[in-house]
Length: 89
Image (cartoon, one colour):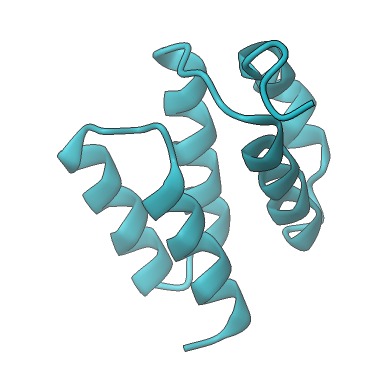
């Protein structure tokens, strides 16, 4: 298992996304080495369902976006809007 495999599997496992079918899609993308699609799917569902995230999880998303060389995805999905206010600060 590569570092990227571990990074994206752990992000999915710890994510606020609870829909089994979406988590399955994300895992299948990781299995295929399609980390960009896995990340995009994860972020899209956080945004779509307006799921709250901790500041620590947000930082992990930023790290993952940087690993994909697409830090603009964080801003595109406006993920900072979903940080739980006052949590972990």
